[in-house]
Length: 190
Length: 254
Image (cartoon, rainbow over all chains, first blue to last red; front, side):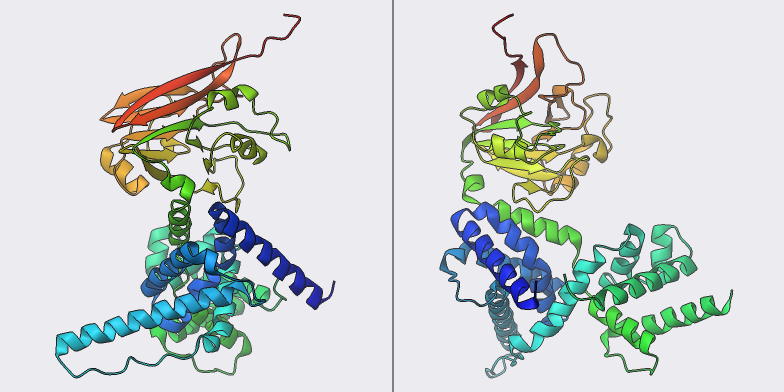
């Protein structure tokens, strides 16, 4: 099957999932599993703040869950709708932060800081989302090292102490994991 | 240490220095190193799997069926079905009879074939936990263990194996309240669990422990019986537990 055929199948599949979730909210979990990494990666790419990324991701999915009836299929991917909700939530958070700082400093009102358009971040977010999914395929010990090193930003020494291994072993696990991820990333997406 | 180990150690030190602190890494001219540094940058802030599970559970808790558990609720509890048949027909019909009229069915894990849940769902909405023998699934009815729900003013903790919290496998033992609260994300009045295939109802340390046993593979089978399930009748903050002993069907030539 050609790439266009695969894309069409994927869209049909997504359309069916959306219709099923609109009919019965318990099916929303399938949409969630499919899009969680994308939404989280999109917010992280824009904010560079993992705590904020969790907050906005939760807000986005709760909003999407409650507003699913209003979603109309017009051919655009479901993720575009989720990204728009996330971008609005982020902008709203930014405006509130500006207002709060203004109140604290009692300075004249200012325009909220402008954000790049969501489209500018989608490409990078898609790469990140794919990477996050691939991490889940790594052997358990390599996954733990990658999460501790990059998600929690622990030092090699701390990771070694926590996992009861030598620092040298942790470095080897980290390098093997990165090399595996690099190889997987260079293959076409499934 | 050989040359290859030396290079690996240098690579990882350079990646760590380049990715630390959030700055954009500069190209070093070493293709492999630059690619690995970039991966490190993209991995920063990777999502916590516990957060992903929590968010999914919180969404499932918003479904109309779950919100419908009001001031009074009857919950059918089942576990350890280990279904093998594609159509779920190894779930005895007697289970469906026992759960007639319940508001929710909770399967505490070791489901086996998910068609078991399809058959249970013909009676009432189903919430299921993944047991030790169950593979990962994206099925919307299956949530991660442990899980907590509230019904009729009672907080019910659901877990596949209570022994995973340090309780003894052989007795109706209960972990300390703070351990339970930490595991379930808040205090609980009732803990429903599976794994032992042995029906249990016991009050320990202010917590009611319920294990429905197994309707298909009981640990201590009795003559004339298939196995057991349980029904929790929750009303105004009180819980009445009934262990339902499923009778074997009597055939015409018996």
